[in-house]
Length: 349
Image (cartoon, rainbow, N blue to C red):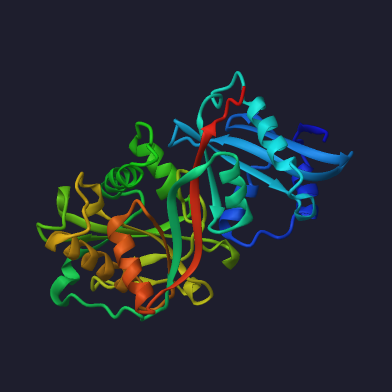
């Protein structure tokens, strides 16, 4: 099967032969199908049955916040699957990484749980690493509680140094199984908390001694803006900025409110618990229960007037426990479930 480098315009040809992506992660993965470049570092190839009639493509791209691994995406047109083209494309794009900083890096693939893509990745030698769930909490499903806790809520700018430092510590902690590189405040802010990343607003919740970490912070939330509802679940994740929706702001009473755009689409949040930055995050004990309660309180205050979507990974024990309970009680619904798989090094020689 003829395989060549992917050129400008090939992404449009691929869109004509691929079925529509059914998940936000699928849309984001296809964004890797662009010409090879050194900044950002990416290598990509395309397969054609005849000139200008593609049947599949593959790409491997750097992950700036995770310098020890790279993303890979391989896709073949539905009618051509099962004939070995996917493996050929994978081997071809791995060969293209030789002599670059991508060579020898472990690979990561994000696929919809239970999909054919997951089976294909496992056949290539990929193994499960983390599970990600995107869940939706309807407006008003979690009435604000906490009594006199209003003074513990702080609305901050997304460029806040306090928020950025907390986010950096949290992001490093919840990615223990997929190590990040040495991070700077600037890198974290640009990737997750900047206007370019879609960050619109942020809220901090101070907690009691058992739940709060340095600075008295217990939990935080960052809201993201997006233009189209079909991108739900694409808040910045795994080091690649995505898009969210909505603005969290303060009304002067400590109660977070959502802007008018949220009437048309749910507010997308990154919700984090500072309890998750501890070395020992065992899901037992009063401190853990209090951390879950604090996260729920913050989520409740941000979902009074708008549906809220949050992304939960298996590396977030507090938010995972909260999500489990919300799903079990029917308070929330699961929109998507993804598996991030760890694969062999890009050098296939």
